[in-house]
Image 1: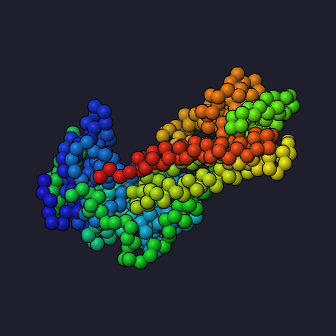
Image 2: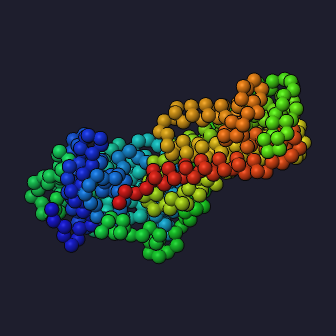
Image 3: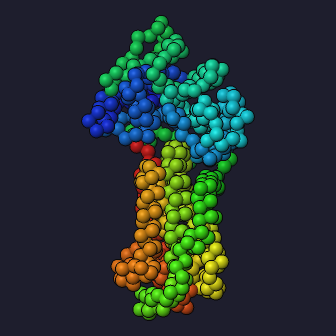
Amino acid sequence: MTAGPHSVLQARDVHKAYGRRRVLRGADLTVEAGQLVAVVGENGAGKSTLLKALASTLRVDAGEVRLRGTLGYCPQEPVVNDTLTVDQHLRYFAAAHRIPDLRRADELVDLLGYRRFRRQAAGTLSGGTRQKLNLTLSLLHDPDVLLLDEPYQGFDWETYLRFWELVADLRSRRRAIVIITHLVFEQDRYDVLADIVDGRLTRREPTGKDHHAGI
Amino acid sequence: MPASDLLQSPAQPAGGRPAAFGQFPTALRFAVRNQTRNRFATLLLIMFVPVWYLLIMAGHRPLTFRLFATGQILAVDGGHLTLISAGLNAVTMIVGFAVFDAIRKSMTFDRRLVFAGYRQTTLIATKVLAIAVVATAVAGYTAAVLLAYWRPGPAGWSAIFAGFGVIALTYGSFGLLLGVLVKNDLEGFFLIIMIGLTDTFLQNPLGNPLANKPILQWFPSFAPMQFAVGGSLGHTALWRHLGLGLVWAAAFTIAGLAGFCLRTRRHT
């Protein structure tokens, strides 16, 4: 594993077991600024566990995670409050991040195309719109490193394409993105593809694209 | 270097400009809203309290009630005593349910807020304030409805209201503790019903083998019952007992908030 001078996220020899079931058995990952990394694996392979470990929402048994800069984490299941409206969520998380205004929030809501639901309670939103809100909340503070767990679940085709526009914009501003997915449709979009097998990450051979990440 | 050392301090707003939304007022507004959104609890409160008083009224047979602070044995109207214990019981269930439900359902969301940079102390303080608002409102309503059945006079009614307020705070904090610890609705509701019923039933000497026994002092509703009965039927204000009731509320609050801190902590 190599950590370059531009690495913003580094996981080294991460172990995690649930009882006797060892899910992560020495996972290593290095992500550099501006990189788009996919962590791919079967159901139950430990993808979400790895992402939670990277986001420090889960205590690991051994290993180390280092982060440089701010972090945004979008969990697989939307973590929202069903009684609050979209606007109230935006204000709540703007307060959490101590953001001076809601300009970024407005941009994200427009880009993801759910402005008309801003005054609607999260509990009444469709699955796709809840996921848009879930994603927006993780991006509100324009983090340096973004961890996304199956981020486009429930998106229609138009939103899926807008999601990739958003990713392109983030990368152009040197934001690092790690996406967890069980299926990769368009491998060329990624700088690095890493398969999680037996609790470890294995770098998939590149498809003719130059990249710099080390695993 | 651990990850936390490398994180940008969330205390600094982007670009040095002031934050658009203060953490405390934002959290307080949404915490009160979260506590009061439970329509089932509101319906229970409005419908249940007068019906409960009506059902529980056990005639006016004479009973004896011991005021532990003074050692005095009061000869009282059993109907009035039962109204007080029924009110205490209604408050335990309504406030306990409302707080438990609101806290349990928002735990994951609160955790996300903390990870996004919300201070745990701010969220905790606003939750406690929201519980106090709900507890005062429920106690006030329950004490007001009691006037339809019995007029104990201003001083007596104030003592009953204070007793209801303290038990509301106690079971509100108990709901907070359960909301943090218990993962399923059924377990939490069952615990609140069983503990609340047992606790308040035992304080009433009517048909109770433990009537006026010292063991009653070890239950959360002991002090509020003593204060309410002392004030309304014994014409005495047992302030020490009101304080003892607040100790129960404080103990549950501290335990619940410690659990909240543990459940929302970052693992770095």
